[in-house]
Image 1 (cartoon, one colour):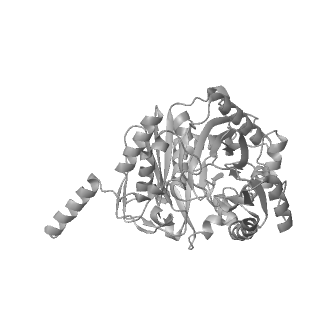
Image 2 (tube, rainbow, N blue to C red):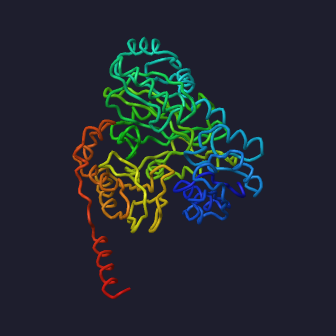
Image 3 (cartoon, rainbow, N blue to C red):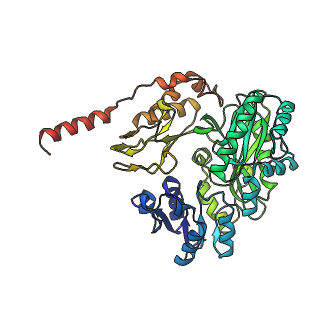
Length: 472
């Protein structure tokens, strides 16, 4: 096992990794930018080092991070998600400096990070992909020809894209030309690569992803699926597991396909294979995420397997220790991403100070977060402040538990997605499990929520009034 792990990330995922290391008796090192000096992950680690005065630059400095790890005696680096997690330069430089990268190989990251190359790999493994262009589209004429052959609507996607960036939907030739231009422009700004390709747009699908674990000895398993269909602008908002639309036969078919996809690039460590499932229950590979996912907590809740600890153990050269038949799914789990956003203003990110904070608890309730009272939400990073994950024995119990937990969750001083997600938990279609990726767009009434006031609000208000009256 490693002696010391440097966590090349920030916020809740850095804290999550630090906790896993502590349970494995591994020393931890945090890095931070100047705005993150008072962040929770900095306080939780055994050591912490400033990597740059700017808010972002230090987290993206491959050379600086690896050389810091070497200088302080860290023998491994965990990238978390975002920032450098899917940048093949980091594992390559780690190998050069004799430091273990906790994740897949640079070759696997490169292969699956390029959407076209990843698609070609899984096709050879017998995994069905969405019809479309075989490679990048170089001209408007080529795009028009492919779209006509595929049939509208189509998606224009950046080859190096992710998180909904560099992705556009076109319903006609005119829209296609606009989509090509805007997707390339966004892809250049986000990924430094203007290459795009075209796929048939699957209308109202379910977005289903399978969690993969693979060791260095050829052992590979999937840990079941997560349904990520509740999303806005291709950004996930709520994730559930297991999916309500999969039976055991379809689960086995998709799980087997996910394993084949991972094997096609000799994958090791944790990863996620993503599919779209159409109304006929046909499924298509869309991409593989070569890192830990935000929503890994859902799978941990329903399987009892600590995915982050498995990542560390695999990277340390230990065998997986799990066979496919050992993976048992128990009950259901839901994760809500608590974002500093105003849903009523198009999910516009919101900054400011958290003036009061109270997190929910009780049986089957888990919080992974980075916010606290007086925490100042910066405008430099992703807007997610916390992940609320609940589990229950039945779907109805799990939804009820999430509804209760969201009602308890207090985060004042900023706008958050909490009241909006509470409305989703009350929605009849959601309760019946009747939703797909169009759910948010087709339910605008969810935005008619009122800013709720709970018992803690009353307590805070009374306390403030008493303090003012007594001159405190």
